[in-house]
Amino acid sequence: MSITTNNPFGYLLSSLNEQPILTGKTSVYLTSAGTLTSLGVSVEQLGTATVTSSGGTPVANFPITGGTRDLLNGGEVVTHQGSGLELKDSTGTVGLTDFTVDTQNGVIDANVTLDGELAGNLPVFDLGSGVFGPTLTLTSAAAGAVDQTLGTSAITSSTTIGTAIVSPLINPYSIGTPSLQFISPMPPPPLGGTAPIVGGDTAVTLGSASTLAELGVAVKTLGFASLDLSGLLPVANFPITGGSENAAGDLILHQGSGLALGNLVGMVSLSDFFIDTRNDVVDANVSLNGKSAGNLAVFNLGTKGALTLTAGAAAAVDKTLGLGTAITSMTPIGNATPGVIAGPPTFDAGLGHNA
Image (tube, rainbow, N blue to C red; front, top):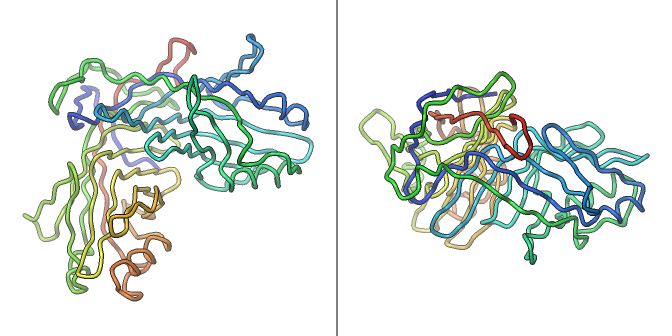
């Protein structure tokens, strides 16, 4: 499902600190190749990825299709729609596609298939410290899924899969300039192609406002978010800071903004919303009473942008705010309407093709 539109003029509506990533390339040196080969596991490229082995250690290259860089702390969320890797042996096949590198949380998510069956968008790699770039180790859950699918017990969360070198390019004309920046007019992405998202705004009509008020819960915007109270229902607006879009779905980032729900009992903060229209979910960095709970799936995305809390998020809100079971995964929270501005089609000169 795609709920965005292209704008050929390319105006950027990001904040001064959060800048959209336009293109680039992530290279992963597969230092685990020997181990995988000894186990009878082959590694194959998917989509627009390429794997080369001219230097001895195989290198997998993934075109960057969008994302956001924080110019103050250097944190990045980098998307790679349309590319991935496949691990295969005589027992089964594991597909990992559409990698999202999140340096703030030290994790890489991917759309995962096990023997052709979609398992969802899951954290697959932890990012560690390396000399030349972050090291990649499978998360415990991913290692277990890989072992079970491929019929082995040799791959664990302590096995180093490789080293990543992430080389994103942000809009060179936007550095140090205010919002509503301008880049050269570009055409929309070709049919089936991927384009970076360079700005815009997501408006969330808070249909749950009266329900929350009756429960004694106040809603407060965080960071660059704003709250419009001029209409019948309050509308929270979140600046879009980057992402990527294609026919399979859109990945829309909102770094540096969020919402807080609070009462006399506790506080729930949801920030850096990440809308994933392919998987119909919204992730966020979550803190409960000031303590980070990690980056979690917080909203399910329904028809026309309808938002309901995931079961896990609803339980966390109820517990933190002392609401019993007043908020459930069936409680309508609101409706999200992203107004996305798309940039030029992703193109990486080193790979030589549109993503």
